[in-house]
Image (cartoon, rainbow, N blue to C red):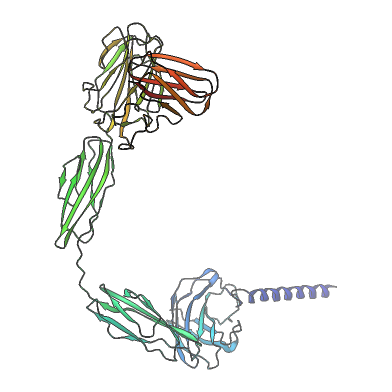
Length: 595
């Protein structure tokens, strides 16, 4: 019984070893896998034909270098040398196998080199005449003081194994050789004739000419030009039915051609195109090509306004958009470049006179609507508030179309008989409200505490940010500055921009975006009768009309569904009025006129 158990144990061990061996034989590209678990010495260099590989210790004592290939010819002899990390050890042993018959195994007869000693170990390898043509595997093995087989792994043995690819070349394969009519070029018009001198009758050619024109060719005898100085490589790949070969010469063609003379090409840039502080210096970098020798800069709106430096710095002290021009010159010519509106200067509004109000809780501004901004507010203890909302753009001009302008809608919590309300805009950005057209004083009293007014941005208004001031006072002179009584002052930052539609023709008072959903005709009216036409029928409409002082002079509602509504304002004086139309889903303000 005990004997049977021992036999079963032995059989199991033999089967296990057989299966492991079989698994090993089918790994690593069908070649047996092998390893070494002690790496205190290892292969540091292998040289054989085209292979010259310096290496460190591989994982588990094995490295696959099959990305490196050596071409060898049947019947020839080649030198092989192997160096190790510690080549002074006296019993370093090197073995090399090449799978000549290509059967994915290393047979005893295929061991092509073995030796033991110190230093770089080298010898010769003779390629059999009957070696199988094509690619195969070479295995290089190092061990210390022992010879192990190509597939043998043994624990606690110092060593390393490296695999390479060998290509046994068909003797009828072409051998790539070429020459050139000249290898030193001094004229960009010279044609270099390359001649294929390959043996074994190649049938196709592929040339690569670094720096040449053309850069590639499939001719057997191509002609090539070189137009710039330098040392350039040439490569030739030849092929026939038995295989292909290639040869490359680094720095084969030496070209020494004087640089061509070109006029300068102007270019420049800056990293700071948006200026927000008068103390900021803007540096401009010359990016011109072909070596200009002089520079002339022109800076619109800047200090200094001109410069002859290659890399100048300037400052901007006024808001706006400014162009930059650079002219560059050299003995070979001149060029210039202008970038329109390249620099945007946004310095914010200038400081304006102070304004405060006592007892603001008695009467204060509750709402201001303009330029897409809706401000709902209460009072501050000082009777003064500052607002800077994004997107408060107002279009500059054209004042020849009075039916389109910016609407301002102002509300107060209450209004008394002696209430006064007005607004001011510093159009020329000089820090005051003293200039003509900068003040707009509305009616002294509105029982509803509500004023609606149109204002048109003057055509000569300065572009950039400025101050809109709204003020309500009681029984005092209505001025933009100083102290008030029972009132409030609110300042808003607005941004004056150019009207993108300037120069286009008006369409009967409905120019631009004022009346997207309502058309008013006639406008102006000679008899005070206006017809309002909606794009779609509307119900629950309300019409309010304000005079030029912002006081409501007309109010009517219509509960029925209509598309056209006629207003009879014949009782009103000639002049400009604001019509505010409220529908179920929209509120629109329009400018109308009675002649």
